[in-house]
Image (tube, rainbow, N blue to C red; front, side, top):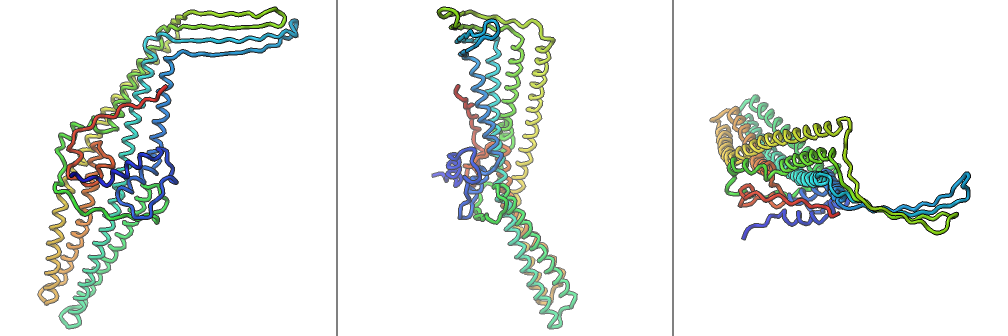
Length: 454
């Protein structure tokens, strides 16, 4: 039975919240936040997701506006007039009902509707991209916090090792086998280790502030994070780069958004080209008027068609067409530029995963060998067979190895999420470690455009 991602349920619950939720609607839980909680809080509180949702809502209204051009218009008017001057005292009452319907316009309405729908689809893809970016920032901040926390733990271990070295140097000095210089060197090494602890603690506090910023909080004091799982998948290597690059245009929402923007610019050009062409409209009106000095009511109505042919506009239509054509060219150039940038981002992320995967095993082996070397050097020094320089060198190597091991696992998690984001398939159900990477699946079809009903 496949493992269910622990992020799936919180994400589905998040979708049930109002898209324009305010931070007050996203209270922090009393329990420590796991990765799912951090992502849910970030999506609910981040103003970027709110702005993206508002843009989509506004464009859905524009689609409805574009569709309204296909319907007839119906207007009613009523007038009550009192004459002055020679006709003073004469009152006139009238009412009129009129209807107009644009029958044919050489595709102007159709182009305008297509443009509005393509812009809506582009904004929806941009909203998905914004959501992925917010999720990646939250995940990156979560793992950066824990990486800094483990780095602090490693620094404390190095400080303990420096204290042990100092005790050995002091013991040798007391029995006459060591020198004051050894003791001073050992104290200097301890001071350096203590300074590293202070620096790592500051780095951890900065990471806590980054998490608070990702969650829209002014202070990290209210945040407590749960430790991530220590289990890693058996296969840490990324999928083949060529397959990821080939699926990039279909998977990445920002590329889909830019491609849809090109289609919107093309529809805008069609709309501009239709502005200088004739239009055919039908009209009908019926009215009733009554004058106080006359007897009875006067009824008047009309029905007919209107053909409007633009003859001369001082070159306006030609200029508008050139502007629209150049905007289409710019949109296509932006799409090509964005594809290159996306490929570079994917390549960098792919290489980062490869490096991080290789670093995990290497850092573990490095700590094991450095620990043995340090124990051996310290034992030799205590037995009077080695020098303090050997101990301090082994101690420094062990401290560096511990720092690398502390960062290696979290660097892989962060690199993995960056690769998934660069591939365009990041969502809450794939953030947890899975046996099957979401990058190895077939790209999902783009979601259809949700059109507002007229």
